[in-house]
Image (tube, rainbow, N blue to C red; front, side, top):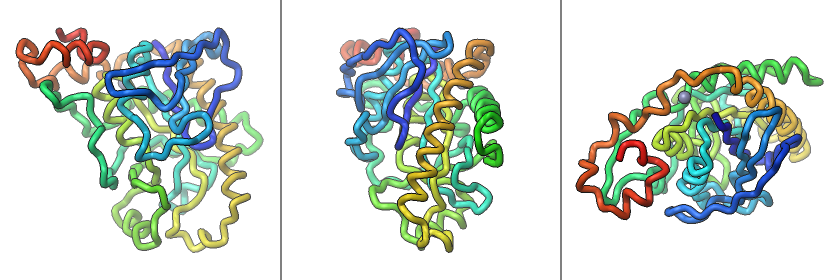
Length: 292
Ligand SMILES: [Zn+2]
């Protein structure tokens, strides 16, 4: 098993990795956000990618999600932990809390590149439960243990939550933010839904570890929040996020993979593969190779 880490805002590197290699990967879909850093963390093989690039130069709508997930698959990644900064839509999900996301809602306008399929080969993956429950369980335990050993044990881990994926770059208006609350959503971000979809197509276990940096604009305190406060939360979350990654890597070694993520395409590939153009089959070989 190989653990991929996709780091969002504030998380651009992992401490304590050994045997580090920088992998510059080209995919049929173009280049990933940055080089993928592979190596070992506590004896577990991991691959790290900074979602926005290491200097945070790539906007959510500019991220080449297909290249990012394809590159992870090429390197043999079986599980992806997405550690992502989010806004909270719920009073009880406070800044510095951790939400293990189990649903997403798409609010983007430009969702054109969320699939490896089309163009001569079709697959309809099941996406009713968009995250891996098994990996989510491991991440939740890792988050709790990390908080217990941190300097702020009062932080909470929420075992489920719906992530509304807005487009950005600006944050929500109050009207939007209140609407999302009425819809029953819990946290808001700009990036994780396409990753989850592509990971499922690539038969990779995926979960979002959402780290709350602030309340979205619905909250009465929102207007009084200073940049210093948000940066303080972001930095604290980065420290905690790195510990959650370490704990997850340690736990993953000891838990056999029993979920069904690795068979996601088995009954989803609908095209007659004999009739799929050879160049499409070749391009998608890391994803569909075992079915050809
Ligand atoms: Zn899984």
